[in-house]
Length: 369
Image 1 (cartoon, rainbow, N blue to C red):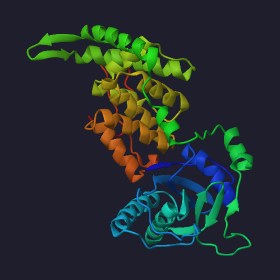
Image 2 (image 1 turned 180 degrees about the vertical axis):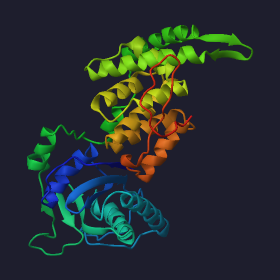
Image 3 (image 1 turned 90 degrees about the horizontal axis):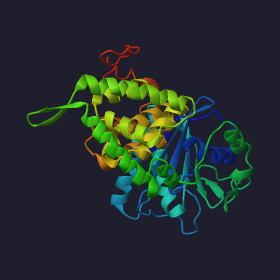
Image 4 (image 1 turned 120 degrees about the horizontal axis):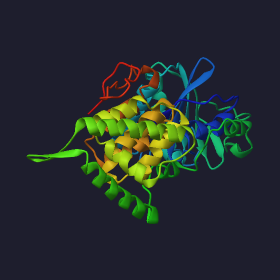
């Protein structure tokens, strides 16, 4: 499941809402159920989940009439559980009403939308409308008036929508699909990966100068590693906030230093939701060696979550967990994202003191090791 805070867009109709959803999520949804939540007249939150894998029963004509029956009870139980989870995520936000949109064929959408509608109602959230969106048309599950909701659906064209134009003007991006979102955190390939491996080898030799031999292996000298991390983080943040970029050796050195939890927590404390910080950690995640992606991936997830870009935060955490399934900070962020915890509820994040460094502004909170 992915969730996000919404940019300010003026939505006055179902067609406007459909045009807005890709910009609210960051990509065009397919085979998805989306909940757009409101508080009063303001859209405050959007969440998306995949449609169930199994088909539910649907009207053979393909109409969007509600149908709560299921072809298999097991699939119904799974849908109900997924719907309750999605409704619980929405209920944690500042919201009192919502619209449900299902993207895909009626055979898969109808039962999923019905389950989400029921779960939202049980959670005390008023469902304003429920729509199926398929092949350039939409159907309402709640309106049966043929003059506004014809049986063969209502055509829409998001490409000519004023909402889409306003979103683009405001700097919002809608990628073609979720795969394009995943590609933003995919590792570098080809000749670039060869260069990055060589840079990583140089960084490891350099890092060896910061360790001291002891019985049982090489143990990092904490002060030296953390002082080097402090310097590298400050330089990287300044570079990206000026619109510049780290070279391969700088990425390799920073990603290696971030393996020290205190260095990672210092980067965490200095990271917020600004575009430059997201660009930094996305770049480091993409260019870091596989065994070094955990910290930059979590930092990217944290930055994008704070900015309200839940979808990108989710794919960043998923990439980390695929490589290091027991990394504690990734597990913490994954839990926050799955439960839909809003960023404003975060009390603080790690405050650390580096030897010889200026103490950063203190905030409450402790880092996950």
